[in-house]
Length: 248
Image 1 (cartoon, rainbow, N blue to C red):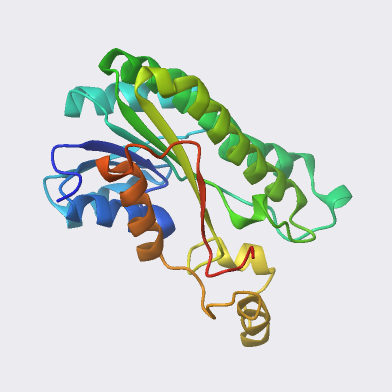
Image 2: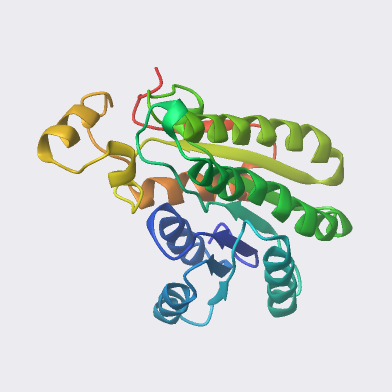
């Protein structure tokens, strides 16, 4: 029960890595707001998880939507201890000059602007409490980029730098900020990363991971739990690779 008495917001929490983080947080005693642009999926997932979870439909790329999300969560919980910026998108593998402006804007808004918006609306609340833990779900793509995922790579590199600058600025306010860098896993984004999902492409992808498998939502939940718990009270500004050795 490492998160007993804690409250958390997890964006993109209805599927993939987000769902793994939600599951772990709940099992460790937290109450969790499952935030997702797919409100129906968030509601169904929250129903499965019992009274400690509730759903919020929100578009993390919209300032007004994030404001409403924040107000709803604070109203429900009274305070927010943990924020996990997990929601993310990618573009299909494409030469960088051929990525459409619409696809670039979508990656920018969901992967980058969302971190600004959640900070804008939640940091004042955490400063008032003189406490908080923020976790940004970045990617190995921000450390060891793959060709043809250029603007996605850039967005995750930005998220890693944002984590470090947030950490140094907010430390004196009692707020820790860390990131995890997953390697690709069994999530809705996997096919987008690979271009197409075939046994040969999967084998080629896995061959770049020394441990020899994709990451799982459970892997992310375990890492997130540690970084957001009081066990990590001296850890801030870290971008932890949860990647089976991919970036070595």
